[in-house]
Length: 138
Image (cartoon, rainbow, N blue to C red; front, side):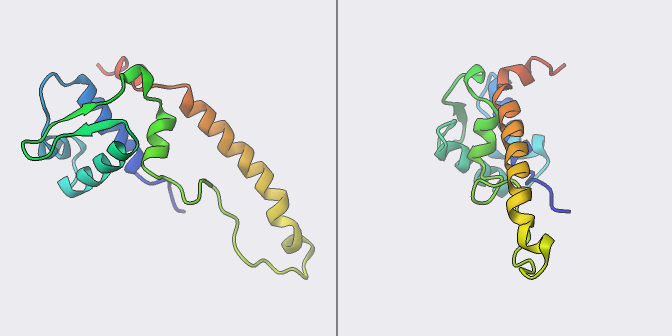
């Protein structure tokens, strides 16, 4: 089973780390906290920068949030790191048999249910901001 990309949890980790840190963080430091390759961190930080959530200073390093933790929702992060293809969380298999009653109707019948499930998840992500998460760190 294919899972949602770990880019989402890594992006939340990166933004949270920057939000709680009082000093400038290098990509290597962030990579150590996330426990992944610095190249992966730079790629994700680039996505967050493109989405207007993060400012990345080249050279010496350092990054800063462009919005307050209260103004960054999990939905913002989810969308920033392109977790899903074509804005669809669920995809229906291609080319079912049109000569079959189920094959002919499955996409239409299932797609509305899957769209509602995705909407419910996105609504939930929109209700939680970075500040909510940070307040639960010990």
